[in-house]
Amino acid sequence: MKNKIQRLFLAMLVMVSVIACQDNNNYHEVIKDGDYLIAAQLKLTDVIIHDIFSPPVASRIYAYPAIAAFEVAALADPSYRSFMGQLNRFEKAEFEPSEDIYYPLASLAAYYKVGTAMIFSENLVQEHKEKAFKEIREKGVPKKVFDRSVAFGEQVADHVIAYSKKDNYHESRSFEKYTVKSDAYTWQPTPPAYMEGIEPHWNKIRPFFLQSADQFKSVPPTDFSTDPSSQFYKEADEVFTIVKNLSDEQKDIAMFWDCNPYKVNVKGHVMFAEKKITPGGHWMGIAAIASKTAGQDWKGTAETLAYTSIAIFDAFIACWDEKYRSILIRPETYINKYIDEDWLPLLQTPPFPEYTSGHSVASNAAAEALKKLFGEPFHFVDSTEVAYGLPIREFDSFRQAADEAAISRLYGGIHYMPAIVNGATKGQNLGLFLNEKVITKSQNLAKVNE
Image (tube, rainbow, N blue to C red; front, side, top):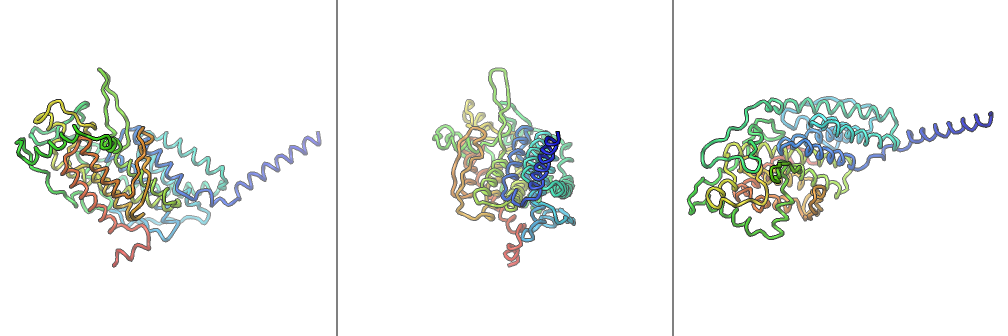
């Protein structure tokens, strides 16, 4: 009996020693890269698809969690500059972290808390967070450090959540729905679901860095006409002709950049949705891939996700401002009425007005943001769509990817060329303005002051 007690005592000593070693090893090496943040974003993408958020709303869901994660990075490293005082009405707040805060964990905690506040299916993000936190804790982060770090990250998250609640989003949920107009040039709901116009008041959402939603107002679309000799008819006929004669490569490009979360399939009398990533989600995926390709640490990853997301968010505000000003008819509606009643676009037409192309605006804004962070040329393998059954595509620059995303809308049959060209211009100008106005690293301040 005595020997048995001694053996049990020794076993307990060994167990305590192991736990002590786990809590006292170099836990600062547990999170070095941005993998945990990228995994959190991927989960957020899954939930955005699951909850079927529109492209503009999805851009908001990506932005605020990324901002919160970056704010922790800026507190951890003085070479980074906080968004507070830079983004519109993002007031400065004082945070006093203790010496034993593990900042990478705090950044992740901030991301998860804000992300959970942005979506419907909170349990899905919560489960993902708990799994990630359990893994981090088991890798040896001391419990006191762990708890204080999570609490600190959530404190930063609370400040960002308070900021998000003043962007007019919640108020806009009760705004009037779009009323379809009878004018011949105006947008009409399209088959097969004939959905109502999405987010007609998105230009009333507070932007992050734009001075107003119409700061980069596009030139008006081509004057509407049904005359076969008119410019508008020719633009519609261009869409009609190209879609009828697409090469396999053009079809692949169109499908790769489809990014329509509202695609509805009809089989007989049954109608069901096919859930897809949004344009913003695709580019946030590219941002994560670029960060991984460049070998960024967790702070650089937080910067990349945050900076790209604010570009995309403001891009959708600027784009939607134009969509519901011009409320232009889609190619599918025009072609079926004036050229060929049996014609179908390759891609399903999204439920909002045509001008300008959302993917063209958002892609070019994101590309300019990523160009600033990584430079060009920058080769990357875009595997964003692999999870949705599509192959990879490779690009030698963000500009090449943005150009392909824009022209995909012509191949898909859902936009006329002016919406693509002028949308790209809007996105580029918006991205360049972001690069001039918002600074994420202190070393870049000199460039702004020159």
